[in-house]
Length: 244
Image 1 (tube, rainbow, N blue to C red):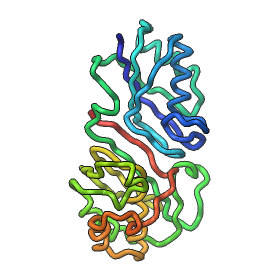
Image 2 (cartoon, one colour):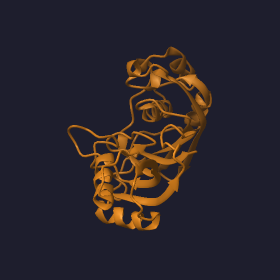
Image 3 (spheres, one colour):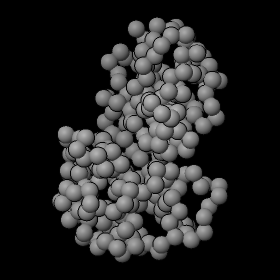
Image 4 (cartoon, one colour):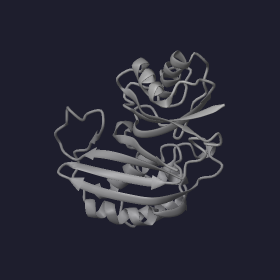
């Protein structure tokens, strides 16, 4: 049986996340229906990351198996024909049978966009969190250092009891500022539920002076969600790349 890999871009604003839901339209459901209309058979799509409601993606990866012989290039254009404008398949390729978009992934890269200004932005309103508080970026950068490496990230997930293993490795955590925009780019071997957004929310509190820079280490060691800052809004988060 043929194994097909997809590279997908989407705006998550109007969706209840990636994964199928009983109530609410999802990316996985919409994509599955489009593919099935093209190949005329049921498919089971495996995504690399289960992005939450309102979260976007520039580089989501997925795969499905099929008996269809439609060439990859034709499949790309045909599936996009049936997709809404806020979901686009950017690439289709045939891969080895053993490939699984989720289990074969070595790391994922997420980027969070913050607009640090009292005045809102209209053009980018669905893709960033507008924060009017004055932020000290140097403090934010200093606080990220203790997060890089392998740690128990229980303090940064809102569903700790749902995860037996809460150990993750952050490979890189970069902060970049340009004008009013601040970008938080995090690469890790995996992410707990709301982990990226809670890290960002905590860093914002540190930038505001509400939490001391060295308090980040205490939060990490506490293994208690109540010790961390709030979870940043979903619309600022984007899955940039899945690395294999």
